[in-house]
Image (cartoon, rainbow, N blue to C red; front, side, top):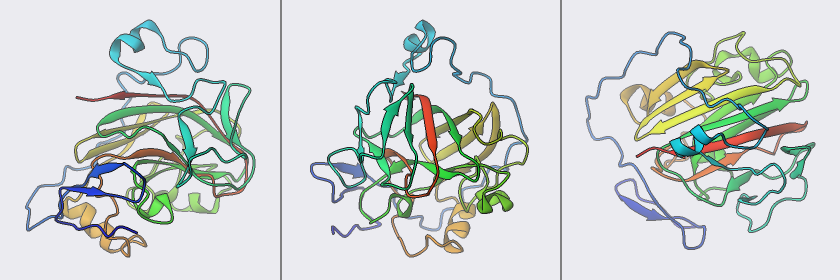
Length: 260
């Protein structure tokens, strides 16, 4: 395993030919942390307007691209793999798995972006979407935060707002009553620009934070991710979907636009 330095501006990770830039560790910064926003409606959530897994002319004009074509698993591979785990499949216009398997990642890496996706889980289902992930560690969730996917009625994690649907898992809470019931479609959105990140669910902003602000640093130090010193450091990386929990997970209309 390649050992990464906090002070390095650019590091190479274990994945062949892949170079990711990392944020430097904070050094006595006094950056003020913005107070969490009150719940507000999304001004321009890219909800599907036509057939599933297609883009409207307006979305194409705005720079949106599909990460799932609705028919194949092209553009994805298993974590630390060159191929797609067989448990993941394109079925009935969804990217889905029905039992525990490997996590998957995009072939492409992203830095600043807006990501939109529809998701549903079976009763008691539990999964997650990760952003700016790396392959430095054995698990993708040791390198980057998680957008929690869960059935908030039955999933044990959902008893805690910090690990409920839409939360920044273990860092910033979600709000009850926003996620839909199991087997119903939800619309998730992640906006990442520089160190600023927002989590949206069904048109409602649930959380926002600044990577390595004093507030984030304090939460990291108190979290179970503290043993992984490069957690959240990558300024670019993979979009990843968690597969290592039991139960069915389906996604569709997975689309992204890079922010300049």
